Amino acid sequence: MKKIIYIASTSLLMLISVISASAEERFQNDWKEKMMSEKIAFLTMEMGITPEEAQVFWPVYNQVDKERDEVIRRVFSSFKALEEAVNAGKSEKELSHLADEYLAALKAQSDMEQKAYKDYAKVLPVEKLAKLYVGEEKFRRQHIRKLHGRKRPDQK
Image (cartoon, rainbow, N blue to C red; front, top):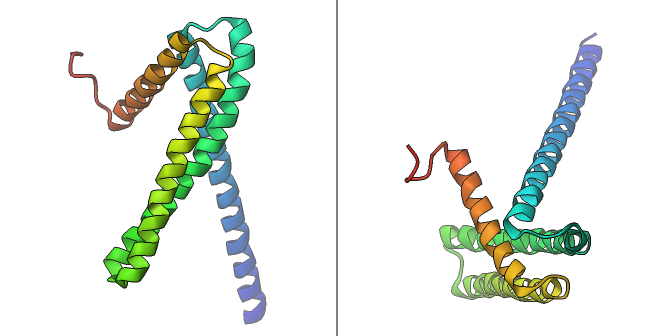
């Protein structure tokens, strides 16, 4: 009898954890999709792109965004490894290796941004690219303020 209760409770806990993980993944995907939709609408307005420009620009932007996510994950993971090694008092040789990996990840991020600019420049004029960068920063700051529940200093 105890075995049956143990197996049943273990199975129930595993089912709950799978359902919970699935729900969390759906929430993350829904949140990311919502954020991306807001970002596209915001940037489209900020940049003033035409429907024809949008048709060729957004596929390029979406590809760059995927690449950016990968590179940023690499930067974060290499930073985390370096930070953990520093806190653990690892050897100078290991710290040097991890610092090199972190710097390589930062360089890869910079290289990816340079490539993205060239890709964007193939489909949009420079003025709209400048508006893209300004718009992305405005959007980022707007959402940081929203997360912190703050208004801009010039708002009452």
